[in-house]
Length: 371
Picture 1 (tube, rainbow, N blue to C red):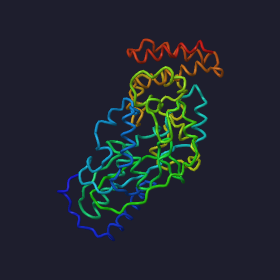
Picture 2: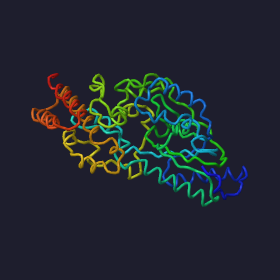
Picture 3: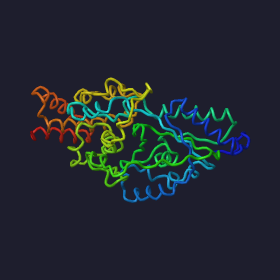
Picture 4: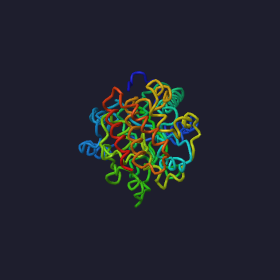
């Protein structure tokens, strides 16, 4: 964060206070449901993060440990950072009961609700840039950098400190009036803005998110072992999915929302007003066999502009093969034709050039004998 281009005048405490209020109003005008400001001290979060890394709970996500202390010390990531503007943008596209019912429709694929519309990185980042430019227009050039899950930043602890919400036992940020269905973003600044009070934890004795996790990845309150998490397995991991975890994945083919779907605070969630996050018709409640038969070009076309695209066609097929295997293993509701269609689709992929795909297809076909 360069100090050389700063042209803004030195602001008094009163002016900084008024500026912070303006920033929050501008943010809401731009479509952020909440805007908060915090400092750069993440001492407590750093201890927890380093402990999590030392226990290898980040799995193959090497980027989590690659940047040393830059992730936990914002002023090392961006020299000169004094305060951080944290924002929240709601994304839930539908009634939660519809999502829950989809988990019970074994022939359908469940895709994490955050990824059904346009890639949030693009939406949130563009709004943050606009917010930063409005601030620059107001006070003159200043040092800043915009982030949206795109760099080594501890977004959740920053959001908690900025009063956006508290970190729940499932490790997601919660807000008592809207639940947890929202994205986060930040603007690192070299302005000494007044900071907000941190959010208060309201989880109490509730452990519903822990009980709801299909693979028991929430190994204790506030600690998620990524190596067991379906979101990690279907999105971040590009290796073979452990066989003992495959039956627990059900029809979840991209991410998992169970810890949020069954969180009592999410009964207060409301459908997003952002049309960019509305679900695409072919992804909201898709047929597994149809998805499995997509060519790579069809996969790229159907997922263009979404976060789903980044996992690639190979992992996409791997994930769906597992879901189809689970469908065969629990096929009490399948007709003979539906059963045959699944087997036919799986056999079609037995000649796939990827050994990873073939392995999971072979496993899926073996599930048909477990009726």
